[in-house]
Image (tube, rainbow, N blue to C red; front, side, top):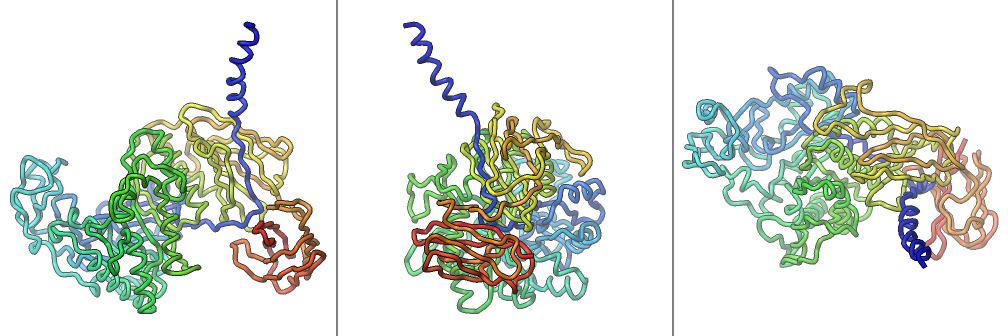
Length: 624
């Protein structure tokens, strides 16, 4: 009897032990998604003060980490920037006016990192800095120390409330430090930069349509104590966007640059069109689509949001990447989403904000609209470099997988340079699907090159305590050789920056060995790992198939003609590696069929077969 009881007690433990292994399935033959080079971005790298240049160490760190985009417009300091006088008003520091020389910053970037793209911005609020002569004397007041009253409106002769808070005892006069600044004034920087200064258009493609306009009555209450209506903001937006597009047809306009999760859904006032409620981002998208159809001018290229979550527990921070596309994730911090329908619905807890935006963009602009998505400011409340590294790696992975255009975190903490370097050094240009049996703990983000002979997988272990055993399968990709390099970031110092350069960093290299075409790895707690493989895609067999023997292609590689043998009626499509359709052919009868490929350039292509039940099989083939 005792023996039977022990056997029964051991069963759950044995079962749990067997479940510890995480299965990763890489679908190497599936149609890929191009990875935007501009998800590897940052804010606040460049100096706008010629007396305080960027150090060579920072230039080296930025270059070696692989930064591809620097957002340099300055956040809240963008809104009242005066490019003619090279000054701006700082709403988070008494509204004082200080030097901000964008010319110097951009020319420094061109000299030192000419390959790096940049983002600047336009002013839509209607005022810009005029002079620093009416600055509040913060040095005499408290030796320029931070206190809770730094956002009081004291420039222009204000008197501080010594008790702190946002309200001054006497408000300053903004006419003493600001001037009128209309749409023509802000857009004129384009001609000035490109025609007068000779600054490269190609290195200044992205322009932010101001910054966090939904909260101007807070950040810029010196001139907008009452928030302008959504319609008034849209008119300001359209006026600047039209002038910018006419001045530079290739410009990429980034908006509306929403402040946070609440503002994704809620403007200061209700947003209605013909009496129908739309949440703020849907309203913005719909209005842009209507104005574009009316004018024939493209007014939006990248839909941009900001996100500053309040979570402090590591377990919650490590799931924040799910907010953007995961339609099943119940977000504990859900707030603005509850106003989605106009009232307050406490049952709404699933954000999937970028997935929603994609749906709205398709609804109002139509298919193939070409408008990207961007997260241009974010930051987390963590002081543990390992948590930060895994959080950042998870965001990069999700944005690769879903084709996000821009990612430029505002806060930059230890651990992030290391992860950026690991991604930019080893990722390829095409994202392919990867599935995990324990997605909440372990994710795999796979990329492949256009030739199909090099593949990398970023493996993220979010467990704070467990070393997890992972089995990685590659489907139709056959690694060459029995050993491949594995690069790991783990056990980083909590508060210390470890990334200095490509040669001096915390990456540890080891060898991963294959076992019958699979890799079995042990991922340390809170680790980011890059498995880098050379090899080849299998050809002549199903890559994504429901019935292995239904569909064959030969020869592979092909010269002039590709033969397709199918056992059932299908719709055939030849696709580029980027997913563009080159040719289609309906096969009504089973048998052998041919595709002429003589006119296609040499390279790797995808043949897709779709049956009447919606099952899709894809194969890669080579034209030589």
